[in-house]
Length: 411
Image (cartoon, rainbow, N blue to C red; front, side, top):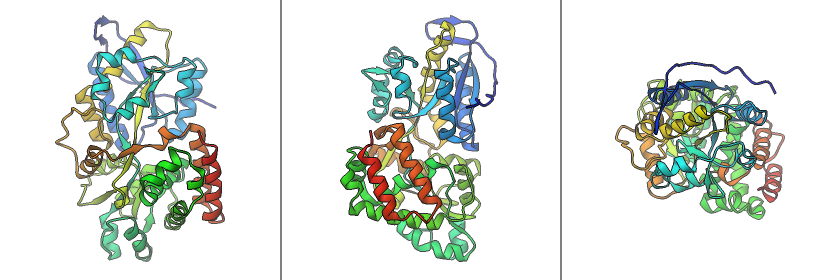
């Protein structure tokens, strides 16, 4: 696999917690390339550079499914970056077990991470055999329905209050020349849409039975059959999207060309960049307006083992900077996600972020599929959903049988 060219920028010196060292470049790889994501990354770079460092930006276009194999190939091939993004969960577990990722336990203890990172499951997903190997930087949730208020006004129907009303409004949207549901062509998008339907329509018990307990009987049962029927409805509503990237699908909603999109709360960054206001220009329904639960995951940064003492010290500084309270607020306001720190000022968050905060505060945050399933099991599920959403030749019944088989051997 060819490694894509990485963009280098910025110049500074580095100031370490226990003293001063010479200027150190640190390459940071990630897949945040949309408008809102780039604005959020700029906040991280600014904060790191303010300590006297050089943030060397290594953005890789194409989302995590494209970026992760490149990142892993570099690390295992002896060309590690200074820090790299993965999602919370088990995506970097094999790299940690191979001794290729730094143990950050001492840095975490100095920063009291166990006391300030909420919920505790975020740090747990960075922990292996009692040692901490990554920095959770945000809380994301997939279970959101984003709606264009203008699209529904044009179609002459009220803005839906839940998924069922959205499905019922789809014919009117089509009649008005509006795409009902925007869905990009990447595997993780159809997989995330399906998982959202599982939690919203199947409920907490079904979601946890399938993904946490790996119960194949529940996966093959009547409650999941209802989810697959809803997925077939979503497939029909998404027909004609004709976009690939998630932010292109979000733009269809922003411009009123699509009625809605099921996408994680990172979509908020795109609405903000477009100057749209939550509750006025667009609406957001956590849990698809049905479920009081969301599954929280998010992004974390890992730090590969480097044979360079100064860069290793710079890694410690970056880890500390990412969890600085001011950095947490500045980054997450641009990203559309929630801070992992429970002790930061969030008075400036928008209406949608307040909804997410309220759900987390009530203790209604569940384990994400990235945390519950191995990367291999996730890929099998995503491949199935890609096939299902791209062709009506795969019936809901047959798709459910194959899904149950995946769950029966999931790890």
